[in-house]
Every structure is written in structure tokens, then in C-alpha cells.
Amino acid sequence: MHELAIGSAIVDTAVKHARGQRVTAIDVRLGRLRQVVPDSLAFYFDIVSRDGPCEGADLRIEHVDSSLRCPACWCEWDPAPPPMATHEEVGADGPPPLPSFRCPTCNEPGKVLTGGELEVESIEISDEAPSETATPETQLT
Amino acid sequence: MHRTKIKVAEDALDANQTIARANRDDFDREGVRVVNLMSAPGAGKTTLLEASLSDLGDVRVGVLEGDVQGSMDADRIAGLHIPVVQLNTHNGFGGECHLDANMVRSAIPDLDLSAIDLLVIENIGNLVCPAEFRVGEDVRAMITSVTEGEDKPLKYPLMFRACELVVVNKVDLLPHLDFDVDRLLANIETVNPGAQTMLVSAKTGEGVAEFRDWLSGVPSRAGAVA
Image (cartoon, rainbow over all chains, first blue to last red):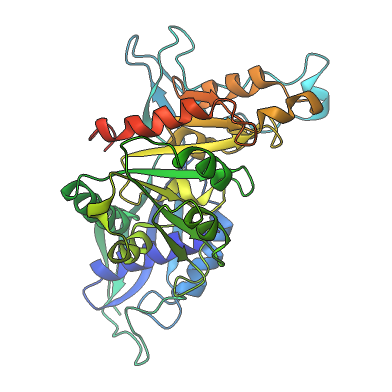
């Protein structure tokens, strides 16, 4: 449920950049290596944005795939597990081993290139004044 | 109505990072090294601290206990005559499931930093959320216990990747469990190559000396982790 705190952080970031105007959309880049559940984030965002400049804003989440690079051979790979295989696909040998954070070729620990993002990329503001009741600091806590 | 797009490109947790850096500056100024200790609920964080903190030699230790509510853990640490501050997220922090930098900052005035060399922050028991929030620590360590299953590093990679030490606790129970330690260690290695691991039993004391040595070594690793 850290999506509640992250939702608040996204609202705070958007408000900080909104120059006192109403926020109509927020574009967020969310990496696959972050354990943030998008539906949960959207749910809490609706709650923590109430009665503030971000109320009703469209939270647009762009998912960023994960990729690692080997510092030795410079190969790149995705350490995220593949989608769940069906029972028939798994077969008698069991599921394939999960991808490692070590280089599949030379065994060096990989450096994260993408997938760690939790970034407010941009916001869209409206020249319509925020409603009378709007207070920038509104939070659940 | 006119709409304008504004480029932001800012980490959503930037505010937390800024406060974490301020905490870190406060700790550094007093020469206090800080460990952020995390685990699932019931993995044995407090029991391991009880078993290890009373005998740290010259290292003066203090503890910041994070819990949603209650002071059971802080009472146990206080029983060892170790300075301890209880932080409840139920009081004013909405019952959050993790500690963040601001919560730790609110507790700093209650800590006599000049009287300690090492601060152990016992985070709230949770394998997901605490991994997202830096609190101003030098190093992050976690405990996983052999009653939790070998697959936990694969299910909670963020936490296992966040820590440079993974303590495997409750190894005294191994004879009673179908638990494959080698598989657990291989899974830790899969998600966090090169992470340090140690096998301990806070109950019998097995391996606790190694953890104590690691804790004692933290002060000399100044600035090892940003």
C-alpha cells in the first residue's frame, strides 16, 4: 500500500510545477523494476488528489520495460520474468529458470539501464482557475 | 479553456530524497552511522537486535523502532539499557506501512546523536514498501527467515536488491522444515548478485557473532552507499 504515499508524492510534484493552476493530466513513467501496482496507484491518486488542483486529473502511466547492461561485454538483457506460462507450456521439466541480474554471458552483475523509473514526466495545466475549495496541501494524512 | 503541457522530468520521490539527505547530514555531523533494517513481519528483527546489540564492544548503539502502533519492540530494546525511540506511523502518519525520511526526521530530536556511534532503524515489517524510501541511512540490511520460503527473493526483488546484507534467520528450525538454504541463496544471488549473506539463529546464537561484527564494522564504512 505504498501506492498511497507514492500517489501523494505524485500530487505534490505536480502541484509544485503547476504555478497555482488546475492540473488536468499527469504523465508518469513507471519502471517494471519498481513494485508499484498501477491500479492501486490510480485508486489512491483519486483519493489524495481530491479537493486540490489535481482533482479529476488524468493520471497517465507509461510502463517502462527493464533492461540491464553488462559492464564487461556490454550486452543488454531484460531481467524481468516472462509472463506466467500455462500448465501445458511448462511441461515436465518445470518452468524455465528466471532471468538473473548477472550477465548471461560473462556472469558480471548488470547495471540497470531502465526499469527503475518513478518519474513525473510532464503535467498539463489549464488556465481555468482551481475551484474555490482547492487547497494545494490536501492529503489523506 | 487553454491547456498547457509542462515538462517536469522529476523523480516522484525527490522530496523524500531531499529529506533523507538532510537526515544523513545530521547523522554525519555527529559521526553516527545508520543501518536501515528491514524484513517481513515476524522474521526476527527485534530478536536479532536483542541478541546482538548488548555486546558491541566500544560501539555505542541506539535504536529507532518503527511500528504502525504499540511500543512492544521499543520496550524490549529498552530492557537492554540501549537508548531507543519508538516511532508509530499510526500517530500523524496515516498508519503508513513503511518509514520514510520525514518520519525519521521527526524522531531525530528525540535521539541523542552525540551519545551514539551507530543507529539501527528497525523499519516496519513489510517486504515491499520500505524498499522504496531512503531515510538517510548508510547501509540497508534485511532479514529473511527460513519459515518464509526460498522463493521470496524472486517475489520481492525490489527489497532483496535494495539491501547489501541479507541475514537468513531461524536456521535452528531447519531440521523441522522442507527448506532448501542453497536454493534461497541462489535466488538471492539471482536478483542481487554479490550481496552479502549470513546464516543466523537469533534464538540459539548461531551466527550472531558474525552479524555483530558486521554491525560493528558499519561505522568504518563511511559513505560506502550514497
